[in-house]
Amino acid sequence: MSKRRVGRAVAVAVAVVAAVTTPVVAHAAPAAPSVADRLRDDFNGDGYQDLAVAAPRGTVDGKARAGYVAVVYGSAKGLDLAHKQIVSQNTPGIPGVAETDDDYGSDLSAGDLDGDGYADLVVGSPGEDVGEVLSAGTLAVLWGGKQGLSGGTAVATGTEEDRVDAETPALGDFNGDGRLDLATGNRLLYGPFDRTAGAAKSRNLAIEPAYFTDDVAAGDVDHDGITDLVALIHDRSDDDMHDPDYKHRRAVFLRGTPEGLSAPAPVNDPDGTRMRGGESLGVGDVDKDGYADLVIGRPNDGYGEVDLDDPLLKGGQIAVVHGSADGPDTSRTAIITQDSPGVPGSSEWADTFGGGISVGDVNADGYADVSTGSASEDLGEVYAAGQVTVLRGGRSGLTGDGSYSMSQNTGNVPGEAERNDFFGADTKLLDVNGDGRAELFAGATGENRDGGVWAFPNPVNTPTATGSVSFGAGTLGTVKNGSSLGAGFTR
Figure 1 (cartoon, rainbow, N blue to C red):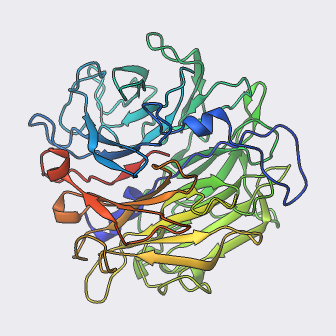
Figure 2 (cartoon, rainbow, N blue to C red):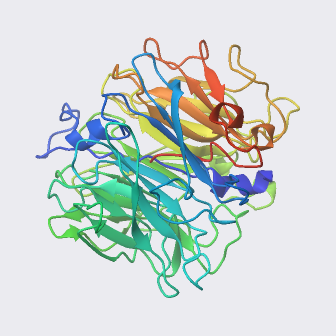
């Protein structure tokens, strides 16, 4: 993978659904997590969240780039590498057949879709051919249960006229009926989901027909108790990935209502002009005021070849747009770069800071924290080795105070920083030991030209390199052949 292409490849985000019922004033305590939140990512219902990670370019039974998903289960001691499973379209009970260039697992989302108390896994396959329709795309739900994931149901299948946007699944209760729904860049599937029939009903979701969807994320931005949807999009007519604003990157907001999602509304700056979009998105309450905030990653900076209208884009940036009763409030937007006070490192061309956004609480203080990758970060003379950074939420929102970064050059981190490792291609904050504090996970799609995953324990209030572990094809028992393991975690 070239350094220039990593921007789109590392985009991933986390969908955080806040279950609250009445508006509150600023800095009020948030409501307790909903059942959907507590079940998220716990596929076997043992009370510990489980790690699902994509290898969309993995070889399956001789089929190159067919793709697979690895699941490593959580436990009281953290990630249990002895308790794992590999799922592909050749796994018994899983819809489809592994074929070359299916890209199975290109994006993942987790939540209890059938209401049985176990989290389920949504898996996208954008390269899936359907009959004679090339790359029609499919979405499938893999069902959780006492023994973990088993079996699955195809819930969306593309056609020539209506391909499935399989790279942007997000879960939320978009009509407030207490059941999870599934949204992508071009369709909305309403729950409850049935293991035979799939979604209760579905409809097209025209976020913007003339635009390409870069990322979506769900959360209760306006704090009315119904999940909203946010999408980052760009103009289909100009697909120059080198340009950080190609054509008209922007964000749109779809409000959740009892009738479902509203029509997309542009997220504009206070002067009414279009707010710049981005490539990676997360949603969470970073200032604990009860309103979910937009965390927009903008890793693309033109790589020094495009004149920037915003110098702060050099090296990438994160924009935090705070939620309000009226939706995203751009008057309170905060910008964070590697040159911001307290943030490790410095802004350099093509660092891709702001990629792989994940939102979670690493110290159980009620403020959402954020992890991000700088997958193309050069470490000394080592080109595109990559690193990850954790930023802390607080009363003032997301800032550089207390932030820290880690790479394969950090003491006690397994491995060694090497050219084109792309460490931090995606990140994930997830509580796999059930102590209420999220641990940090990082993917490195270029590690040993196949990919790998790093897990950082959180013994007190901060993920640490001490005791960190990594795993790749050798641990998983998969074929080492450019799988891009670590390209994505659940959103």
